[in-house]
Length: 106
Image (tube, rainbow, N blue to C red; front, side):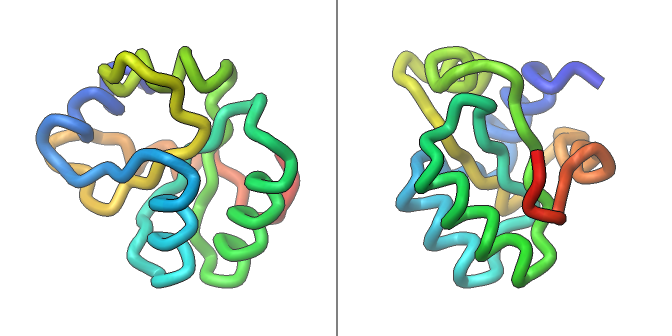
């Protein structure tokens, strides 16, 4: 599955929240279906998101790249270190959950 293609479909047809504060809110409220963090995500954000996601058994997928690359993959002209999929829309993005970690390890 092409992650970038599925992410763009999710952004245009579903409900995807971008940014660390939006991601943390969605995780803590239990409304996230999938979290995507960059492999270069700041350590503090990584730990906060992973702790909350692990507690609620929300899968976390590690996007190999930095915030600029994840932002571009989502069709945005700005860097994104973390994003949350609340509704996948017409995408198959939730299939990433099979490759995601919920153990707190990358």
